[in-house]
Structure formats: C-alpha cells, structure tokens
Image 1 (cartoon, one colour):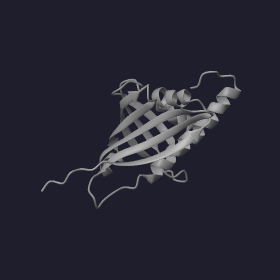
Image 2 (tube, one colour):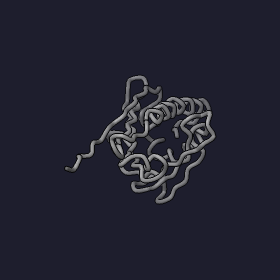
Image 3 (cartoon, helix red, strand yellow):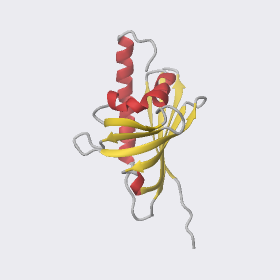
Image 4 (cartoon, one colour):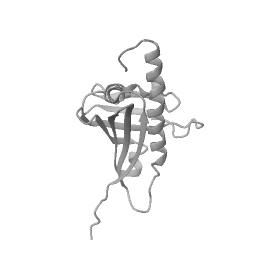
Length: 167
C-alpha cells in the first residue's frame, strides 16, 4: 500500500520597523549578498545558474546554524517564485546538507505592510524523507528571525547615512 506524502509547514513572524518594500526588495534582489550583511550566519554565496535575481536562478550559500561553531553547511536553492503583489519570494532547496535529509524543502518569505513598519513571515514547507528519521528545522526559523531583526539595523544605518532607498 502506497503512503501519501505529507507537506509540513513551520513558520515564524517578526515585526520590523521599516517599509515592507525595503525588506521585500532585499529578499527579491539582494539576498544573494546575505553574507555581506550577516557574516556571522553566512560565510559566502555564489550564483550557480542565472543572475541570482531571476526566476530559475540557482544560488549556493555556506552558513552556520550555531554562531559558536566553525562548521559551515551548504544549501543550493532555486529562486522558484516571486510575487510582487503579495511581496513574497520562494526558494526551493535543490541540493546541499538539508536536501539530503528531506524529500522536498522550500523557504518562503512574505512581507506585509503595517502602520509602523511591516510584518515578515518566514515559512519552511517540507516533506520528511521518512516518518522515523527527521532533521529538526526549528534552528532555521531562528536564523530567519535573526536575519529580519538584523536587517533593521542595516536599514537604520543606511538611513542615518542619508541613503534614501534601501537596499
């Protein structure tokens, strides 16, 4: 008897005191450079296919889960969906350490405007390789929440330096 696969979703939301368009534009056009803004998380990144901004582009990041660790993991992700109206960007994981442990895996970020800033919602959509063996993904939600809060510091610094449009 065949077993149906089941998609699971983990989510985290953070409020950020910057315009939704600023964070969305960063995720859409500049996340390839995450290692420049967040060197404590990302060691480097490289575009393997495309320009890193267009649908179908494949990007590889080296990152750490624990800032105290010097062991970097790698992930290869394909920019699979961009929705300007909903301000959402989706990366589908196609290789690297996480891909070895899951049947499918995608990361989606959606940004909505609020009166005093915006709300950033990160979602990890995944299927387990099997029901017994699973890899915890909660630390990745913590990384994403950290990226959101640290982005605000970079946004504020840019504003203080007279940069009107960020990134």
